[in-house]
Image (cartoon, helix red, strand yellow):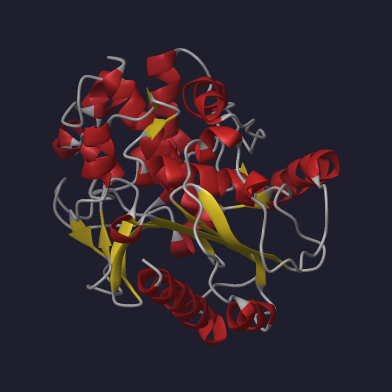
Length: 355
Protein backbone atom coordinates (compact mmCIF):
# COMPACT_ATOMS: atom_id res chain seq x y z
CA UNK A 1 0.00 0.00 0.00
CA UNK A 2 2.72 2.45 1.02
CA UNK A 3 4.75 1.59 -2.06
CA UNK A 4 1.79 2.36 -4.33
CA UNK A 5 1.14 5.67 -2.57
CA UNK A 6 4.77 6.62 -2.86
CA UNK A 7 4.97 5.64 -6.53
CA UNK A 8 2.00 7.82 -7.40
CA UNK A 9 3.28 10.73 -5.33
CA UNK A 10 6.80 10.48 -6.66
CA UNK A 11 5.59 10.37 -10.25
CA UNK A 12 3.53 13.54 -9.80
CA UNK A 13 6.30 15.44 -8.06
CA UNK A 14 9.04 14.17 -10.35
CA UNK A 15 7.11 15.38 -13.39
CA UNK A 16 6.76 18.79 -11.81
CA UNK A 17 10.30 19.25 -10.58
CA UNK A 18 12.82 17.35 -12.70
CA UNK A 19 14.99 19.94 -14.37
CA UNK A 20 17.90 17.98 -15.75
CA UNK A 21 19.65 14.70 -16.20
CA UNK A 22 23.23 13.53 -15.87
CA UNK A 23 25.83 16.14 -14.88
CA UNK A 24 29.50 15.99 -15.78
CA UNK A 25 30.86 19.33 -14.55
CA UNK A 26 34.06 19.16 -12.54
CA UNK A 27 33.43 22.59 -10.98
CA UNK A 28 29.75 22.64 -9.94
CA UNK A 29 28.01 25.95 -9.42
CA UNK A 30 27.00 27.13 -5.96
CA UNK A 31 23.37 27.60 -6.99
CA UNK A 32 22.76 23.87 -6.34
CA UNK A 33 21.57 24.90 -2.86
CA UNK A 34 18.97 27.52 -1.96
CA UNK A 35 20.65 30.89 -1.62
CA UNK A 36 19.62 30.99 2.03
CA UNK A 37 21.91 28.04 2.66
CA UNK A 38 24.81 29.63 0.79
CA UNK A 39 24.85 33.15 2.23
CA UNK A 40 28.31 34.35 3.16
CA UNK A 41 30.10 31.22 1.91
CA UNK A 42 33.83 31.83 1.29
CA UNK A 43 35.35 30.68 -1.99
CA UNK A 44 37.58 27.59 -1.78
CA UNK A 45 40.12 26.32 -4.32
CA UNK A 46 38.56 23.20 -5.87
CA UNK A 47 40.37 19.88 -5.36
CA UNK A 48 40.75 17.45 -8.24
CA UNK A 49 37.51 15.42 -8.14
CA UNK A 50 38.19 13.23 -11.18
CA UNK A 51 38.83 10.05 -9.13
CA UNK A 52 35.78 10.76 -6.98
CA UNK A 53 33.61 11.17 -10.06
CA UNK A 54 34.90 7.95 -11.60
CA UNK A 55 34.23 6.04 -8.38
CA UNK A 56 30.74 7.53 -8.05
CA UNK A 57 29.90 6.59 -11.64
CA UNK A 58 31.08 3.04 -10.98
CA UNK A 59 28.38 2.55 -8.32
CA UNK A 60 25.25 1.64 -10.30
CA UNK A 61 22.95 2.09 -7.31
CA UNK A 62 24.14 5.64 -6.60
CA UNK A 63 21.72 8.24 -7.98
CA UNK A 64 23.18 11.47 -6.63
CA UNK A 65 25.83 12.94 -4.38
CA UNK A 66 26.35 16.51 -3.19
CA UNK A 67 29.32 17.71 -1.15
CA UNK A 68 29.14 21.12 0.50
CA UNK A 69 31.68 22.95 2.60
CA UNK A 70 30.73 26.05 4.57
CA UNK A 71 27.61 26.29 2.45
CA UNK A 72 29.37 26.04 -0.92
CA UNK A 73 28.86 23.10 -3.26
CA UNK A 74 32.32 21.75 -4.02
CA UNK A 75 31.30 18.53 -5.78
CA UNK A 76 28.13 17.02 -7.15
CA UNK A 77 27.30 13.94 -9.17
CA UNK A 78 24.04 12.78 -10.76
CA UNK A 79 23.54 9.49 -12.52
CA UNK A 80 21.76 9.53 -15.86
CA UNK A 81 18.12 10.46 -15.40
CA UNK A 82 18.66 12.10 -11.98
CA UNK A 83 19.22 15.71 -11.00
CA UNK A 84 19.55 18.12 -8.09
CA UNK A 85 15.81 18.80 -8.20
CA UNK A 86 14.40 15.32 -8.67
CA UNK A 87 12.59 14.18 -5.49
CA UNK A 88 13.99 11.04 -3.89
CA UNK A 89 12.40 8.76 -1.35
CA UNK A 90 14.83 9.24 1.54
CA UNK A 91 13.29 6.32 3.48
CA UNK A 92 14.32 6.35 7.15
CA UNK A 93 16.40 9.53 6.78
CA UNK A 94 12.92 11.02 7.31
CA UNK A 95 13.36 10.26 11.02
CA UNK A 96 15.96 13.02 11.31
CA UNK A 97 13.49 15.53 9.89
CA UNK A 98 10.85 14.38 12.38
CA UNK A 99 13.42 14.89 15.14
CA UNK A 100 14.02 18.47 14.00
CA UNK A 101 10.27 19.12 14.11
CA UNK A 102 10.08 17.75 17.65
CA UNK A 103 12.87 20.13 18.67
CA UNK A 104 11.04 23.07 17.11
CA UNK A 105 7.84 22.05 18.91
CA UNK A 106 9.61 22.07 22.26
CA UNK A 107 11.19 25.46 21.54
CA UNK A 108 7.74 26.87 20.70
CA UNK A 109 6.15 25.42 23.81
CA UNK A 110 3.93 22.98 21.93
CA UNK A 111 5.65 20.19 23.85
CA UNK A 112 6.92 20.60 27.39
CA UNK A 113 10.27 18.79 27.00
CA UNK A 114 11.67 15.41 25.98
CA UNK A 115 10.69 13.96 29.35
CA UNK A 116 6.98 14.60 28.73
CA UNK A 117 5.02 11.31 28.82
CA UNK A 118 3.28 10.65 25.51
CA UNK A 119 0.16 9.61 27.45
CA UNK A 120 -0.61 13.35 27.58
CA UNK A 121 -1.45 13.01 23.86
CA UNK A 122 -2.54 9.39 23.84
CA UNK A 123 -4.72 8.93 26.96
CA UNK A 124 -5.66 5.44 25.80
CA UNK A 125 -2.29 4.30 27.17
CA UNK A 126 -3.63 4.76 30.71
CA UNK A 127 -6.09 1.94 30.02
CA UNK A 128 -3.44 -0.51 28.81
CA UNK A 129 -2.89 -3.54 31.02
CA UNK A 130 0.88 -2.97 30.91
CA UNK A 131 1.39 0.04 33.15
CA UNK A 132 4.89 0.59 31.77
CA UNK A 133 3.38 2.25 28.70
CA UNK A 134 2.42 5.25 30.81
CA UNK A 135 6.14 5.87 31.40
CA UNK A 136 6.99 6.19 27.68
CA UNK A 137 8.29 9.69 26.96
CA UNK A 138 9.02 11.76 23.88
CA UNK A 139 12.72 10.99 24.34
CA UNK A 140 12.05 7.26 24.41
CA UNK A 141 10.43 7.51 20.99
CA UNK A 142 13.23 9.71 19.62
CA UNK A 143 15.89 7.24 20.75
CA UNK A 144 13.98 4.04 19.86
CA UNK A 145 13.85 3.01 23.51
CA UNK A 146 10.09 2.98 24.09
CA UNK A 147 10.18 -0.70 25.00
CA UNK A 148 7.38 -1.44 22.53
CA UNK A 149 7.78 -4.33 20.15
CA UNK A 150 9.22 -3.11 16.85
CA UNK A 151 7.03 -2.46 13.82
CA UNK A 152 10.06 -2.64 11.51
CA UNK A 153 11.75 -5.67 9.97
CA UNK A 154 9.46 -8.72 9.77
CA UNK A 155 6.64 -6.80 11.50
CA UNK A 156 6.59 -3.92 9.00
CA UNK A 157 4.12 -5.40 6.51
CA UNK A 158 1.49 -6.17 9.14
CA UNK A 159 1.84 -2.69 10.57
CA UNK A 160 1.44 -0.67 7.35
CA UNK A 161 -1.53 -2.81 6.25
CA UNK A 162 -3.32 -2.28 9.56
CA UNK A 163 -6.36 0.00 9.76
CA UNK A 164 -4.79 2.35 12.31
CA UNK A 165 -1.01 2.68 12.34
CA UNK A 166 -0.80 4.69 15.57
CA UNK A 167 -3.07 2.35 17.51
CA UNK A 168 -1.21 -0.68 16.15
CA UNK A 169 2.16 0.72 17.24
CA UNK A 170 0.94 1.68 20.72
CA UNK A 171 -0.78 -1.65 21.36
CA UNK A 172 2.36 -3.69 20.64
CA UNK A 173 3.52 -5.69 23.66
CA UNK A 174 6.36 -4.31 25.77
CA UNK A 175 9.59 -6.22 25.21
CA UNK A 176 11.71 -4.11 27.58
CA UNK A 177 11.32 -1.28 30.07
CA UNK A 178 11.12 2.25 28.61
CA UNK A 179 14.52 3.90 28.35
CA UNK A 180 16.53 0.68 28.26
CA UNK A 181 17.15 -1.41 25.13
CA UNK A 182 17.01 0.03 21.61
CA UNK A 183 14.27 -1.47 19.45
CA UNK A 184 14.56 0.18 16.03
CA UNK A 185 10.96 0.84 15.02
CA UNK A 186 9.48 3.15 12.43
CA UNK A 187 6.28 2.97 14.44
CA UNK A 188 7.97 5.05 17.16
CA UNK A 189 8.70 7.83 14.65
CA UNK A 190 5.16 7.60 13.29
CA UNK A 191 3.75 8.06 16.78
CA UNK A 192 5.89 11.22 16.97
CA UNK A 193 4.27 12.44 13.73
CA UNK A 194 0.82 11.87 15.27
CA UNK A 195 1.98 13.65 18.42
CA UNK A 196 3.22 16.62 16.35
CA UNK A 197 -0.13 16.74 14.56
CA UNK A 198 -2.01 16.90 17.85
CA UNK A 199 0.39 19.37 19.48
CA UNK A 200 0.59 21.80 16.53
CA UNK A 201 -3.05 21.39 15.46
CA UNK A 202 -1.91 21.05 11.86
CA UNK A 203 -0.63 18.19 9.72
CA UNK A 204 3.01 17.18 9.99
CA UNK A 205 3.49 18.32 6.39
CA UNK A 206 1.98 21.75 7.13
CA UNK A 207 4.08 22.15 10.26
CA UNK A 208 7.24 21.04 8.44
CA UNK A 209 6.53 23.41 5.59
CA UNK A 210 5.98 26.48 7.79
CA UNK A 211 8.51 25.80 10.56
CA UNK A 212 11.37 24.19 8.64
CA UNK A 213 11.08 24.35 4.86
CA UNK A 214 10.04 27.99 4.52
CA UNK A 215 13.05 29.36 6.46
CA UNK A 216 15.29 27.16 4.29
CA UNK A 217 13.74 28.58 1.14
CA UNK A 218 12.41 25.22 -0.04
CA UNK A 219 9.04 23.61 -0.72
CA UNK A 220 8.39 20.15 0.65
CA UNK A 221 6.49 17.62 -1.41
CA UNK A 222 3.62 15.86 0.30
CA UNK A 223 4.50 12.31 1.26
CA UNK A 224 2.32 9.29 2.16
CA UNK A 225 -0.25 9.35 4.96
CA UNK A 226 -1.71 6.61 7.13
CA UNK A 227 -5.43 5.65 6.98
CA UNK A 228 -6.23 8.43 9.49
CA UNK A 229 -4.40 11.05 7.43
CA UNK A 230 -1.30 11.26 9.63
CA UNK A 231 1.78 11.90 7.50
CA UNK A 232 4.17 8.98 7.62
CA UNK A 233 6.58 9.77 10.46
CA UNK A 234 9.85 8.09 9.69
CA UNK A 235 9.70 6.76 6.14
CA UNK A 236 8.95 7.65 2.52
CA UNK A 237 9.51 11.41 2.82
CA UNK A 238 10.33 13.02 -0.53
CA UNK A 239 13.35 15.34 -0.63
CA UNK A 240 15.48 16.51 -3.53
CA UNK A 241 19.27 16.28 -3.23
CA UNK A 242 19.34 20.08 -2.92
CA UNK A 243 16.89 19.97 -0.04
CA UNK A 244 18.85 17.23 1.70
CA UNK A 245 22.01 19.34 1.47
CA UNK A 246 20.19 22.41 2.80
CA UNK A 247 18.92 20.39 5.76
CA UNK A 248 22.42 19.09 6.46
CA UNK A 249 23.81 22.62 6.28
CA UNK A 250 21.18 23.74 8.79
CA UNK A 251 22.53 21.22 11.31
CA UNK A 252 26.14 22.05 10.46
CA UNK A 253 25.31 25.69 11.23
CA UNK A 254 23.82 24.73 14.62
CA UNK A 255 20.26 25.31 13.47
CA UNK A 256 20.73 28.72 11.87
CA UNK A 257 20.13 29.98 8.35
CA UNK A 258 20.46 33.61 7.23
CA UNK A 259 20.80 34.68 10.85
CA UNK A 260 17.54 32.98 11.84
CA UNK A 261 17.56 30.28 14.50
CA UNK A 262 15.28 27.68 12.89
CA UNK A 263 16.16 24.77 15.17
CA UNK A 264 17.50 25.51 18.65
CA UNK A 265 21.28 25.19 18.85
CA UNK A 266 20.94 23.08 22.00
CA UNK A 267 18.60 20.71 20.15
CA UNK A 268 21.01 20.27 17.24
CA UNK A 269 23.81 19.41 19.65
CA UNK A 270 21.60 17.11 21.75
CA UNK A 271 20.48 15.24 18.63
CA UNK A 272 24.05 14.11 17.95
CA UNK A 273 24.82 12.98 21.51
CA UNK A 274 24.97 9.15 21.58
CA UNK A 275 22.21 7.73 23.78
CA UNK A 276 22.02 4.11 22.66
CA UNK A 277 23.63 1.63 20.27
CA UNK A 278 22.55 -0.46 17.31
CA UNK A 279 21.94 -4.08 18.27
CA UNK A 280 23.55 -5.14 15.00
CA UNK A 281 26.59 -2.86 15.17
CA UNK A 282 27.46 -1.67 18.70
CA UNK A 283 29.89 0.89 17.27
CA UNK A 284 27.02 2.66 15.53
CA UNK A 285 25.33 4.96 18.03
CA UNK A 286 21.99 6.75 17.98
CA UNK A 287 20.87 10.12 19.30
CA UNK A 288 17.61 11.96 18.68
CA UNK A 289 16.75 10.49 15.28
CA UNK A 290 20.37 10.80 14.08
CA UNK A 291 23.09 8.14 13.84
CA UNK A 292 26.63 8.77 15.07
CA UNK A 293 29.59 6.80 13.76
CA UNK A 294 33.06 7.14 12.31
CA UNK A 295 33.24 7.45 8.53
CA UNK A 296 36.71 7.52 7.06
CA UNK A 297 38.13 7.87 10.56
CA UNK A 298 36.09 11.00 11.31
CA UNK A 299 32.97 11.33 13.39
CA UNK A 300 29.80 12.00 11.43
CA UNK A 301 26.28 12.67 12.66
CA UNK A 302 23.99 11.45 9.93
CA UNK A 303 20.51 10.71 8.67
CA UNK A 304 20.29 7.29 7.03
CA UNK A 305 17.65 5.55 4.98
CA UNK A 306 17.19 2.12 3.41
CA UNK A 307 19.05 1.56 0.16
CA UNK A 308 21.72 4.19 0.83
CA UNK A 309 20.05 7.55 1.47
CA UNK A 310 22.44 9.70 3.53
CA UNK A 311 22.84 13.19 4.96
CA UNK A 312 26.20 13.23 6.75
CA UNK A 313 27.38 16.18 8.84
CA UNK A 314 31.11 16.34 9.60
CA UNK A 315 31.21 19.13 12.14
CA UNK A 316 35.01 19.29 12.44
CA UNK A 317 35.39 19.71 8.67
CA UNK A 318 32.48 22.13 8.10
CA UNK A 319 31.36 19.47 5.64
CA UNK A 320 28.04 17.98 4.54
CA UNK A 321 27.76 15.01 2.19
CA UNK A 322 24.44 13.74 0.85
CA UNK A 323 23.69 10.68 -1.25
CA UNK A 324 20.57 9.16 -2.79
CA UNK A 325 20.49 5.60 -4.03
CA UNK A 326 18.20 2.93 -5.40
CA UNK A 327 15.53 1.84 -2.92
CA UNK A 328 15.06 -1.54 -4.60
CA UNK A 329 17.37 -3.44 -2.25
CA UNK A 330 19.07 -2.92 1.09
CA UNK A 331 22.35 -1.03 1.05
CA UNK A 332 23.80 -4.04 2.87
CA UNK A 333 23.41 -6.15 -0.28
CA UNK A 334 26.72 -6.95 -1.98
CA UNK A 335 28.66 -4.45 0.11
CA UNK A 336 27.13 -1.30 -1.40
CA UNK A 337 26.96 0.55 1.93
CA UNK A 338 30.62 -0.25 2.59
CA UNK A 339 31.63 1.02 -0.85
CA UNK A 340 29.54 4.18 -0.56
CA UNK A 341 30.81 5.04 2.92
CA UNK A 342 34.37 4.33 1.80
CA UNK A 343 33.91 6.86 -0.99
CA UNK A 344 32.48 9.40 1.46
CA UNK A 345 35.41 8.72 3.80
CA UNK A 346 37.84 9.51 0.99
CA UNK A 347 35.94 12.73 0.29
CA UNK A 348 36.31 13.68 3.95
CA UNK A 349 40.04 12.99 3.73
CA UNK A 350 40.36 15.19 0.63
CA UNK A 351 38.56 18.03 2.38
CA UNK A 352 40.66 17.62 5.52
CA UNK A 353 43.82 17.86 3.42
CA UNK A 354 42.57 21.04 1.76
CA UNK A 355 41.80 22.80 5.05
